[in-house]
Amino acid sequence: MIPDPTPLIGPTLVFLDFVGMAVFAATGALAGARLRQDLVTIIFFAAVTGVGGGTLRDLLIGAPVFWVHDWRYVAVATAVAVVVWFVGGKGWRMTALLWLDAAGLAAYGVIGAAKAMAYGVPPLICIVMGALTACFGGVVRDLLAGQPSILLQREITVTAALVAASTFVGLRMLDLTTFGAATMAVTLGFGIRAGALHFGWSLPAFSPGQAEGPETPS
Figure (cartoon, rainbow, N blue to C red):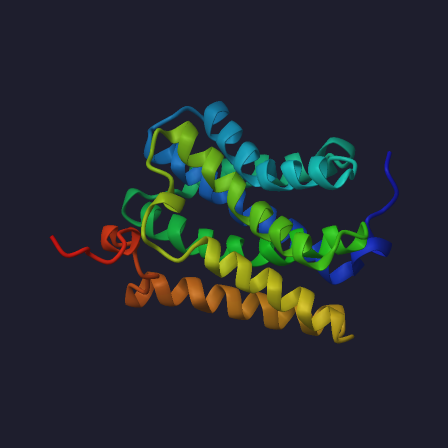
């Protein structure tokens, strides 16, 4: 059994870690429900989506893989999947998936950055770890569901996670409390993703003309 993670990242972020994992597990369960899968498959979707990003993060920063040493993460993912199985209605599944994904992106962006900071990773890489933690589970979910990855659509997703992670890292480097930094970072990250969903915000797309040099006279 690994030591309690609370001394490393604090009780606020431990709580946020479970919330973020549960939210992403719900998106995985909803994706499985949309495909009319059985309960076991929906639980698998929930677990893989919930722990996917954190697993890759822990492997990269040399930390013990969190869910292997703490059964509560898989238990929460399983419980979320069962709830979705019994109460999931057809009409709201896609909308719920998108908004839960927005909340998960912000929360896990902060958690990924915070855990990397706790292991002495340089600030820039902490931000990268935050974005990876927030996005990789969704990539795995979309792959399993046979859906185009949301990362390949012109929607603000990775940007929201990067903003959340960057804000947290920056505020902690300025010695703001963990609670204050996490609250501001999650709020900002979620707000950006929510704006993209509600108002259709997107970043400019690459134009082929940008790759062409100035025309030469013929």
